[in-house]
Length: 396
Image 1 (tube, rainbow, N blue to C red):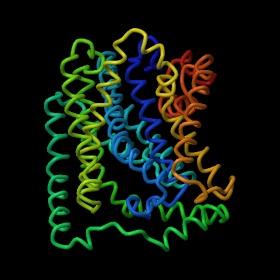
Image 2: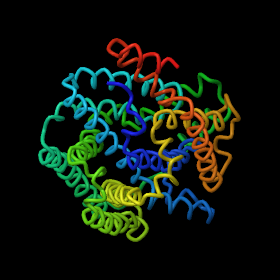
Image 3: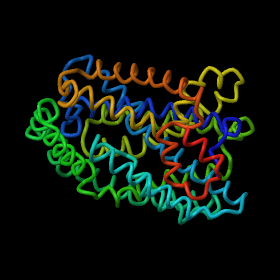
């Protein structure tokens, strides 16, 4: 169970992770610099530049990159499962320990750095996935479809009826008091003030912890798709499966983007916004995966996208760095710029910071085999079963 060597890696998977990290940061930046979670973004942003920037983020990024990252998470877990099967070692014991350490890192991130953490959800969803890891791809895909389509279809139907019967209650409203409290705490408050506001935000975003239930229908299905795809080697066989990927790209982009436009065509309400992200986002995510998978079959492309792939190799480090950098810039214990910049500026800041992270990743991998957080994660998980040689590599 040594770290995966560079020659053993599937570079297209790393590129997908790196690409998803940029998209995640662009979306998260809305949350980092303003009380985005408490506003109706379709009416809140009045300046033309802000509205148009948000519109394009909403249509092509929001709700489209986290399904991609979730599928890649499931893909990675399944690859580890198959690796342990080949070597005759126990997958469940290692995976549970690995996911529990991830859960710990997620809790530290959520409660001490930034409330929009996704690692807790991935850790819990991963624990669900490993109970089904021995299933064949067909069953993984079938369970994924049932978990996703039935409850989300029923929920969307109920929201559609609500929007028709009582339009006023189907509109998102801006919480003015919550907005004001966020701005005061994050831009002017003490560390304690920021902590309590962060906790309030986490409880709001997760529905008071209801995300544990919602992940069953919102995250686990994507992990199952990723696991099935790994067992079928859909990414590794991209050149062989070119027709499959082309069809996936066409359908995913056309249908997904059409659904993502719905709030701008039919008006924004709880139904159109939910349908947009629930169904449009995953379709686009599959299309994005297909585009990258096919691009990486062109010999020169992996070399061009090598910096993005290196960022993908240290995805947890990059993700946590983004939170640390952004909260330092915007929170009161840093530069206190929360609520003081527009979306256009925030988006370009996200892109600029990401470019600097690509440079960091390039420099880091000149000397090391893993990102710093990944190495710590692995050491905490495997420390008593690694060979002395591998432990020395991690300690370096």
